[in-house]
Image: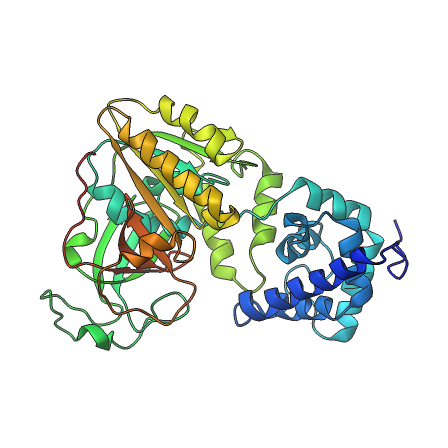
Amino acid sequence: MVVNVGNTGNTGRAAGNAWGVAERYREFSWREVRGRSDAHEELSARISQDAEFCDLLSGSLPAGDKQQPELLLATVRYLDGPHADMGPRGEAAYGRWREWTIRHWDEVRAVIMQRAVQTNEPARCATLLPLLARLPQPLALLEAGTSAGLALHPDRYRYRYEAGGPYGAEGYGTGGQYAAEGYGADGPYGEDRRAGALRAEVGAPESPLVLTCHTGGAADELPDRMPQIVWRGGIDLDPLDPVSEPDDLRWLQALVWPGDGERAARLSAAVEAVRPAPRPRMVRGDLIGELPALAAEAPPEATLVIFHSAVLSYLPPARREEFARLVRSLLDGRPGGGHWVSNEHHSVLPWITAAAPHAPRPDDALLLTLALDGHPVALTGPYGRSLHSLSSGTADTSGR
């Protein structure tokens, strides 16, 4: 299909929508991918300056999620478009990318309408594991916004917890010392706190996926054993199965930003790690609508843990609060109780972060707040590479 991008029929309000699309790509380039993916930064910036192409996007795609920049960029990579691996480099390369996308617009639009932006970061298991290991065992894990369900298998991976250096984009670097805590070779907890020093190592010995997490805070809060998981379930609007469906794996790989080879390797290793495991109970549907029925399937002898990571930002604020109330109601009404583990940006459930005890705070807007039953316990990197405890003691992990 060849589209005349200069004549899509957009006038009046639709033309204003084209301006909104351009702003969306400009924001994506400047605030989300700048310094993290050179290819996506350049490509989205060029699209934001291409009025005719933005007119095509606003006139051909429904407003809202289907106009997400990440969705279009991943779709072209998924369809093996030009420069699929690293993205355009210069005006001529952008011209080739643009021409290919317009020429294949029927295919591009079909994928956009079928798929959604849904990453599945197994490395976040490294920030969840310390809490899961301390809860009353065995566990029944229920993940809201599970995507491909890779976070439902924390017992299939191996973990290295190292002393963290200074805060960086992921919360910690690998060098230096966290001076605000006074960590030297002998920290306040009588251990080697030099950046990179191994603090704990646990997990499946032969796992193809080894996750390294830079840490700060009390050493006794790091796991010395793995959780015992007897049931796994997840809810998603479009659950994926990268183990059995190669096309789903290709889509997840296309969503990894160009230049992030480590994340692409983690995804492939996680899929191999969970391949021998029984498939979790996966439910397609709305988080709030499907949660009560799925929670009721968890075995009564297990501690039910309802958890989610970087998911609730996709819900309107009122729906986030509705979800939080529902989770607490379900756990309060369950014989033997259960626990709610949330790992969300501080702006998503601000009343959780507001209750955090006094602690050094990094100047990093990307960090998530890890909470147990609504009580903040740690700051975590968005991709699971850092964990800083907000307390010097152990959180209450008794049954509710």
